[in-house]
Image (tube, rainbow, N blue to C red; front, side):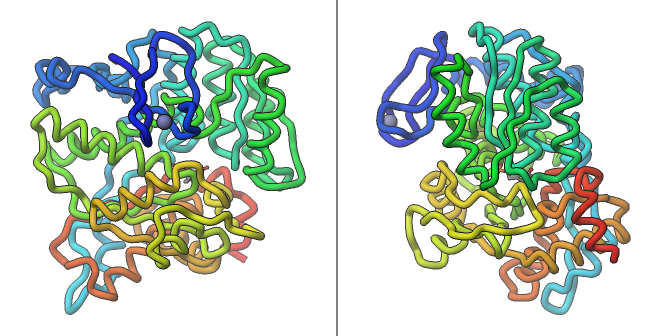
Length: 390
Ligand SMILES: Cc1ncc(COP(=O)(O)O)c(C=O)c1O
Ligand SMILES: [Zn+2]
């Protein structure tokens, strides 16, 4: 890693020191010497590397990794589900599910936390803190335990029980608030200086994005050096989407791909859809979504800090944004489970519902390669699945 750069104003920061937001208030992104990286980061060399996301070492912060075996999750060809999705006169033949539920702590949040905690440890952090909708807290608590650093996890009081239990089991201090993740974020911001916490909030430190971008690298590698045509991503804070788009830009700079991009589809819950609203209103930024409510706890992010980045990436990739209701997610979760053997989080199930809608409308063509991200395991969502199966 060479330096950090503001995603909005371009101001540069020293990456060897602890950094959070830019003085302009926007997120910082890590920059690398990509010409040098391209010399050794090749499909051939990757064949003999460990099957974790740390295989992409040239484009990650070069710390001693705090690793639990995250990344290189299965890319499942969802033939039976694809056959059930009508697309013009045909169906979706090239439908894939990237199953992030297979990560340590059962979600893609492990990716961001392995890089963020590794870096925080290197920088000498004494305690780590983050607000969470659920899964990020579990992942932070696990990596903090592995790193031997205390963690404070701040979550809404009605977060799924499994998320609370895992944080407690990992030895983290859990603070429950009557409110949403935005209130939890305020709590961390107000307490961190006094308590000496290193703030690991989404986009308020630069390295969670780095771990999450490896989802983009893995797709390229798993498709044999190609990218899919369309990617459906359940979007809360948007870090997964921002990370993958950053990966695609890096790949282009390394000469792996051209200017073409997968069309990114941000999938949100109807009960909390700030990005969808902004997208439909042709706005560059999102308004705070009042009274957010959905069973997909990870999508209950009413005011995403990365709104500007998410919306510009949807535009640049000729993507789109749409939402699914809780009932649609529960139904889609049953379909994904019974047709493919994948027990998904409601967030992941939402992408199935969204793909059905965009296939029916003709936005996707039957011969296109389509990837749905199941961002988490269903095993952590006992409350939602009880409703789905009632
Ligand atoms: C299962 C799951 N999917 C998706 C998301 C949204 O993630 P992002 O912040 O990358 O948009 C979350 C966030 O908590 C989550 O737990
Ligand atoms: Zn800036």
